[in-house]
Amino acid sequence: MAVPGTFLVPLLLLLYGPGVECVLFNEEYMTCKWGTRETLSVNYSLYYRYKNASDKVECKHYLQDHGVRVGCYFKRNELIQFQSFHVFINASIDGKTLEIPSKRMLLQDLVKPEAPVNLTIRNMSNNQLQLTWATPYPKARCLEHAVKYKSNKDTSWTELSVNGDVFSLPSVDYEKYYTFYVRSKINKYCGSTQFWSEWSAPVFWGSKSTSKGTMEEQLHWFKIHTILVPIASCLLLLVLVILLMRIERVWVILMPRIPNPSKNFDELFITHNGDFQEWAGVPKDVVESFKPNYSENICYVTELPPKDSHEPLWDSSNHAPPPMPGPPAAPSEHSPYQKSYGRV
Image (tube, rainbow, N blue to C red):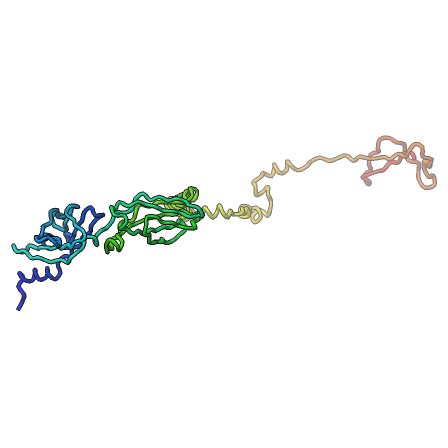
């Protein structure tokens, strides 16, 4: 036999009802939530009571998400620690109220302290750092802490547990730049909560030159990756486009051609056989005007012996006496030249 729908919904709510999660924030207020607007199908009401109370009390301040109840807000005067805290969730279906019981809880196990504040670093002797902080939680002796730190040259965080409010780091490197965080939770002597506070605001230690160098290095790489690289890429792309559009012109600039005038003189050597005047179109009368049309007179030279010479003027046995110096005689028809002899 099929289960009627009126009994199926309450059965599902009993088996898969909303789980209630309560958190006590720094012992100042508490919230109990059981879902979100997207996961809830019906509206719920919350009732609670402590161990010594006989009557249940309904939540006075519901947390709502677009008109849907998703939790309850408890003020500080409504909270009692070290007593059993019982929560009941009621669902209204078709005018009927269905109660979904919840487990028993202890408020001291639900505490989530506020994050530490006023972190301070002191440089002690022997290259040792001392980190101190303050806590907004009213019972500082009930807290345990965790410190995590990392230098600018480390790749991972180092996290250590601390019982007090002082942390010492030996053997620091003055060339490094350190970052520290602190968080807290209730220790085993005051509760069994697993809720850690949020991490505190960071505190830094290191030489100003190291810090400045780190910031300058980060700024340098930021400029390279965000400014220079895109600009360089755009310029390179522009150059490639210009090269592709004018590749022939670029080739001429890079590898200039050697002039070859031989083609311009093919007609001079083939048609005119090397005759420059004919190839250049110079008229023949102009060519004839440049030819020489004059003759030179022959110059006769007579060599005279020195005056103090005792040689005979002539040899009467072989030669006739030479003529006296004077103007040269006219040449004969058969001999173009005639030599005259002077006195010896």
